Image 1 (cartoon, rainbow, N blue to C red):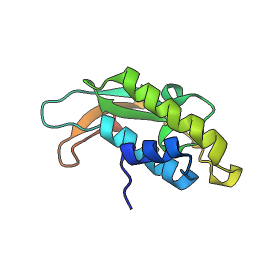
Image 2 (image 1 turned 135 degrees about the horizontal axis):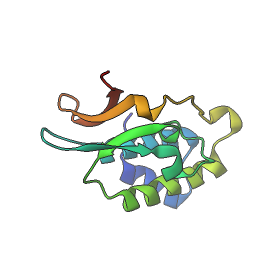
Image 3 (image 1 turned 60 degrees about the horizontal axis):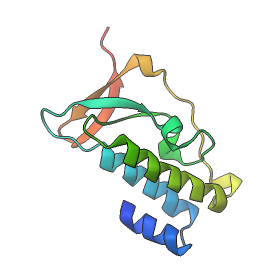
Length: 124
């Protein structure tokens, strides 16, 4: 089941969102800001810092790639809202933490088949 960012936001405002919906909302938010097409430039973003360091949403645990034209201020606002809601809703067993690859070893590119900015290993 795919839940749009706006649907998760509506659930959050109504107070009905559960942790799984917030996890899906975080994934959808990263995907939304990572959309790209041929010729677009992507940039690496520290998603943990963007969303706030003490969050337990899997999509916000490491570095990610977003479109260079993305409104990062708006992205940060939305990410922090989701992370804040998750801090109230998610139980310890529902939280996701991750070990992250060194971002210096990765570069952001637009995968035109996926239509998404992704991080790939740097070429030596």
